[in-house]
Figure (spheres, rainbow, N blue to C red):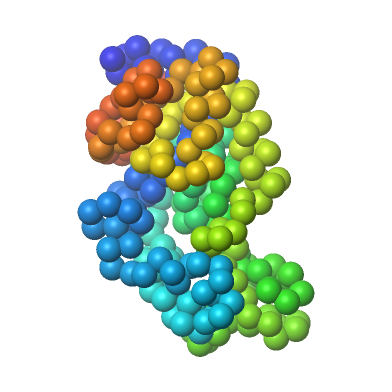
Length: 242
């Protein structure tokens, strides 16, 4: 099955990848849901948009522990690096990721649609000014705008917020265009992101899934399912594509 999958990837006219938390687990970032997930240790209300505006100091205190302490130390793994190498070769056209960890870009990927935003930037809730994370003192109890003094919010989607329309449209365009989509490390349960592989499937794309556990795609959507770690799959498939 691996050799057949390698041929499909090699001959794809418009190869894309759709990634979830599972691709970053081997970089030391735990998933949000399931056994050992972040929501077993932390209260997800910290990133509820209404809670954030009502309790910004408490929300920021929790977000630093949940996101910035762990994700800031993570490094791209072989799965991120392989996808970046494929894009550089012209084999991969783009990545749609549900992750906010910036690891695809740090591995070298250029065309990345961050469906749920990123921890790499902060947005002023007052004047809308956007800051790179390196421009902000995250040790401050309440990171605030240098221009207007309003509280800064991480530039990722909180519970209760909608997806950025431009990102949604760009992601949907990739899903419509693809003839082969590699789906990595996602349960396929978070709307509306989980609809994108379904869109690709309905438009005739082959779906190649890599996951340590079956997902909502495994039984009726995926054409090929590899029940293994992302790193193992990409290490083995890369050898066949060399």
